[in-house]
Amino acid sequence: MHNNTHPVNRAPLLPMHHTPHNVPVQPAFLESLFDGSAINGMLHRSTHRLIDRDASFSQSFGKMYLRRILPANVPSLIHLHDWYHTLLDTPTLFILLCIFALYITVALVWACWWWLISDRCDLKMTNFMDAVLFSANTLATIGYGVPDVYFNSCPEALFVMLTEFCFTLFLDAMCVSLVFLRLSRSTRRGLSVLFSSKAVMTLIRGQWHLLFQVADCRSLQAIDVSIRCYAVRHVKDARGRGAYFQYHNMRLNHPADDLGGRVLLEVPCLVTHRLDAWSPLTPPDNPAASVSNTFRYPDVLQRAADYDAGNRYVANDELPTLQPSNCPPHRLPGGSVRALTQDEIMKFWIESSVEIVVVLEGIEHISAGSFQKRYSYRPEDIVWNEMFVPLVNIGPDGFCVVDLTKLHDTEQLMPEDEQGFPPPASIH
Image (cartoon, rainbow, N blue to C red; front, side, top):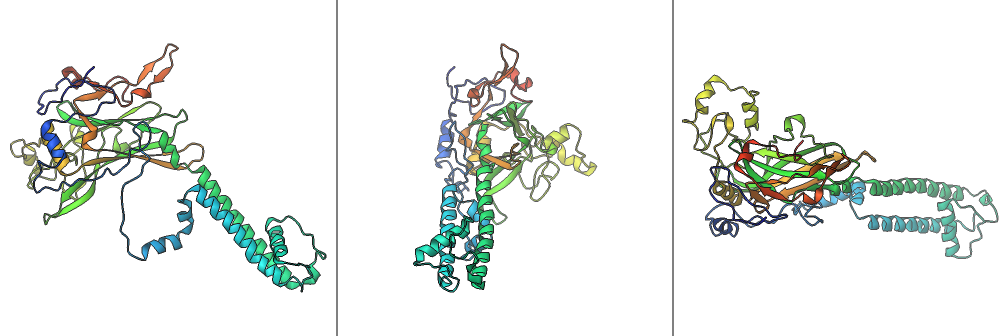
């Protein structure tokens, strides 16, 4: 296998070559778009990737590179009124140090009270250290070694002992819950979910589709896993001003988002989004387009696949707007679009700084806690006219074998592949 420069204009499906873990090669005009030299007066600005890729195997820790500017009093309100979750979000070592410091503080505070009532209650303490040790005994319910276990019938001792005992019960319960939640949290479960490091764009029955892979490397699978996608891009408002990092929902054909976007991660899943008239990845057309064949905020987001399957009703008075002669240049009946060239799509993506954000959520089966895995794709992470290699095979013993070492690998597409989807063992 070897690398080959991807063609810029593409009407038919052309064969492409692949290299495992290859980096997409962009045409010269796209290189000028990436450095901004081909953009004049557009919304494009150099932006940082929204979601990191700092984990091994080109994966993400789910960290979002996002800075918030809050009003002056908001951070203090957050920390004061929700101190428990603020503490839970801190590192485990910091929580343990806080617990250790809190127990010492409680012992010292009540030691002062014990020291003040030592003579009256016949505790016979000779120095403050004796009071600290006595307070620690009460804190840990170890037992007492005082001359009079009834504290000389001193009511002050009863008050100090009960208050320290009650406060210790509350402190023990809080510390146990903090440590338990930190140790049993399921947020790290998402690290075992793997995404392909690149997405592919290919024609399927004349329509562009975006595809990427997701798989789980654990044998004990998560429960009720679902996936959704967003296109984050820069847009212009009605006044022509830039509105940056606006997110747009992406309808999924597989797994079908109208069925909840549920995925079964025992075998790899090939997530598919069709670039139809409502897709946020499709270059917009003129403002005169009908809402029945294009998306206009705040209308309901549609799918061309529903129209193709006969599941979407079109009113008779809207039919003339669906005729090809009345549609904008690249719009077709039912919300389909003609096969735009790679140039047109990539130019729109780069000018609007598109980043496709993927969110996968599920339930960890042991603790029954929910987890989330986030990943993203930018234009430079997308290869054209290729497809992922099959990951699933049958072993010599007849068992199902999933080879995740090839998760990022793609291979060339031949013209006949356009009608032969899905590829073997890449979709379920």
